[in-house]
Amino acid sequence: MATTDALLVVIRHAPHSSNLLREGLDAALVAAAFGKPVHLLFMGQGIMALLKEQGSGAPGQKATLPIIDMLEMYDIDKLLVPEETLRTMSIPPDQLVEDVTLLAADEVVTLFQQHSQILNF
Image (cartoon, rainbow, N blue to C red):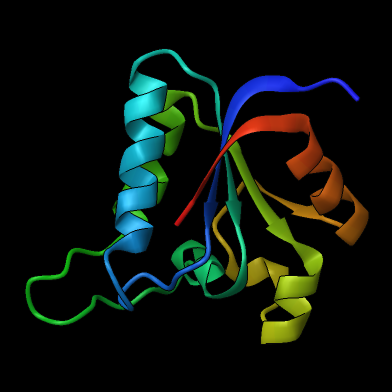
C-alpha cells in the first residue's frame, strides 16, 4: 500500500468543547504554510466545525467557520468526513460546508493506512 507524504490531521472535538479543534486547525495551517500537503479528517464531534449554521461559543471564543472557509487559501482542500459519523449524529450532508468528501468505513481505514504522519486533536 502506497503512503502519501501528506499530513493527516484528525479533528475529533466540537468547536467550543476545548481548544483542541482550534489547535488542530492551527497545526494544519502551519504545515500547509511550510508546503506540506494536508488532509483533514473530521470525526465524531469534530464534524460540528463543518456545519454551515454555526453559533459562536462563550464570550472570547472565536468562531471556527471563518478558519474552515480560508483553508483553501492554504491549499487544504481535502475535508473528509466518515458517512457513519453523519448517520450516528443524524446530520444530513447538506448541512455541511461545501467541498466535504464523505468516506465509507473501508475508505477511512485505507486513509489511515496511507498516511505515515497523523496528528489527532
